Amino acid sequence: MVVTQSEQDACTFGWCTEWLIMSFPLFRIPHTTFDTLSDASGFMHVYICFLRMIHRDESSHRHANCIPKEILNLFGSIFCILPFINM
Image: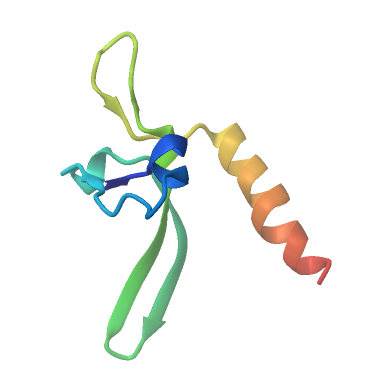
């Protein structure tokens, strides 16, 4: 993961060219299956990762990577499906 720059770094003259990079396993990032592509040789899953939702569960102190169904329904109806129907 590449950590975004602060406003101070972005506004400095000549811009800051150094970026903070964190090593982070993909399975800890909250994600969901968006689609499955298939052809004669096999299939491939397409995932959507929600980087801003990375957090630890308060009770177990483990990384939470499951997304609640209510949020997935909201994401599907407001951000993905409905805007493309209205185009």
